[in-house]
Image (cartoon, rainbow, N blue to C red; front, side):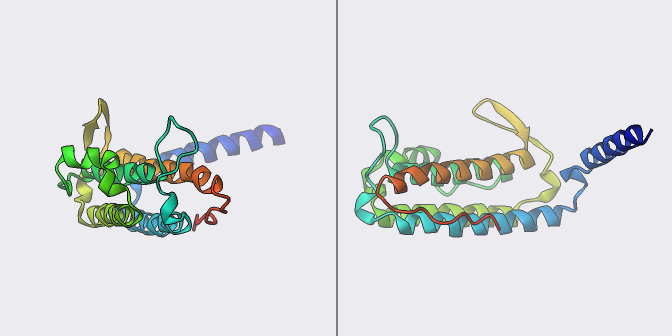
Length: 184
């Protein structure tokens, strides 16, 4: 009987936790947490940019993948493009310019990469600050995928985390220890 009660209690707890969705949170709490996370991500990504020597931004662990500079520029362009889709804010650049940035040789210097990456994080943070939170659950589409604006905010954050994480290998191949994780 005790096992049955424990199982029932766990099931009730699971159902209750599932019912507590992001939709039930105050929108300003969601905004505040996202801003904190993006500000932390900016600091963390800057630590990656700082630890990679400027003369190594053109290196790649394998011939078939992006250079460190291209990887970081891809992160930056996606921060802007995906965040514009998620929030409904205008992009900083015309799409053709934005999405060709990682292939633009002049953008691949360490100074340019720092500039574009930081600009993309500032854009993301400011877009969240300006977003009309009553539209969090509106459906939007990009590249054939549809989801709520809230889901796209989460996907945008996930994308930059993924590409920053990939850069760990680029740094390690230079014999450098990557920055310590900044989870909090």
